[in-house]
Picture 1: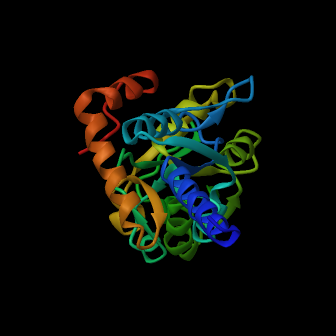
Picture 2: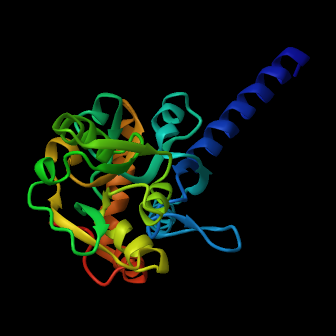
Amino acid sequence: MNKTALLGALTLCAASFLAHADEDSLRIGIEAAYPPFSYKTPEGNVSGFDYDIGNALCEEMKVKCEWVIQEFDGMIPSLKVRKIDAVLSSMSITEDRMKSVDFSKKYYHTPGKFAMKAGNVINDPLVDLKGKKVGVQRSSTYDRFATEQLETAGVSVVRYGSQNEAFLDLASGRLDATLADIVNTDESFIKTPAGKGFALVGPDINDPKYFGRGAGIAVRKGDSVNTARLNTAIDAIRANGKYQQVMAKYFAFDIYGE
């Protein structure tokens, strides 16, 4: 074999190896600041429902999970420029987001809820929160709801890089309320020492226009291969009991929803 032919053969082998390597791994974006769905342990390791579900899905698909930790508002941009292949970080499936990315089927569905000082009563948020300061996580579905519904009704909306920052400001009195996922708020704030004297108040916030059909796994627009295999894997872990095993570690109820 001459040098040119040998070089060509080596190039083809290298390309084949890289393609195979890409198929055997999945780079997944996760926030790691949204307990109990994703967070860092005292040892600095990532844990949580999202993380465990992702690992169960990768095991089912026989691929390696490569977790990429970053802020939530940078997830979709990172997906578009191919820094990651998927986002598994409690991202709600909404019509607005589906203009930019595709989603797997849902892997859980919970409503939002306001947290305030205990004793407050919220019947109509658009009326009862007028003139008050409400914190939301930037670029979340709660941010969009707050912008289009609360802000236009005279509520002062304060945006944060993470939900934990909003909880800190609520505890310190710099906010009157915060709006977030009911489970995240209950587990990572209400039930903690910082949340003493606070409560979940008002109606469930779950308008499909803003909050879609539950949390799904985002992939690049047109990525039908990963969409299909993620959907198959979600069905598989729900059928073989792995989903229920992960869920039982974090919740005493069925988080999958209807």
